Length: 388
Image (cartoon, rainbow, N blue to C red):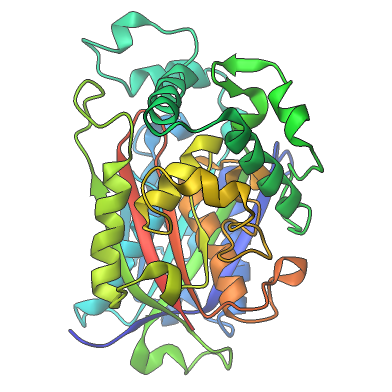
């Protein structure tokens, strides 16, 4: 169907702290949902919302069939609730398709995470890997997989470590303007380069830490979007996700083909021909510093192998040619597991609504691209194009 899909002002979040001690993940979901429905003009989820989509993963919860906890905290009891074991931005894509069918007018999207409750994170990550070829190696540090990709990328395109350090410095400095970012800092490139390695060539500062968080976003069809709020809606012009070959032995180690393919499809839906000229900023996955460079190239915001040169010239700074992660991204906010895509989306929505991003606000923000990756060891990327 041709009708457009909008985010109707309804964004709510809770947490974004290293440890949320005062609330369970269910209470975090409730807090985020309450704020989102109020932000959408006072929605009553039991009467106004047609369906709910929740992105979560049993292994993060430590509970089998964790989706049974999804309906009640977000007001979805006795309503259609669809759960997806994937990134929160994938749930936005699911909600988008549901609304496009014409069978649903308003869909609420939710994701949550409490990595502070996970005492065996390494074992969980190891369990996600191929049981025959990768898990059997029993690597003592799962970040080694990302480090190998970093080394392959840096060697192939002559990317200096200074470029990775610049990403860290830029994003942590941007995070100082973000009220929900826990890891903002004023660092120098030398401080990053001289910090201890986690696994070469990545230092501890090159790897985003975890945070507890919950986010709820409300989407609606064009014909009902203006009923609930006077806030101009943010339109979802295109959204797509791709999973590349999941086998680490066969996927491309030097370049994230999955992100490029997802971007191409999202741009086609949105009618974007030249992203760097038609868009104004990007929120991309940067849970590892080198990944920001890779994803900038995959999203066609720089030629392949050239992102580091533009970065070092300041092109992707807050006041540069094309701001990337003005919120500080994952390096500044932290990684809330499957909430990560919704975190990127919320920051973009606040920018696009004009004046609502606080000290993060950019001078020009009318169109944006949002990207999220599910992290090691996956090859799944989601890309969305938004406008106001």
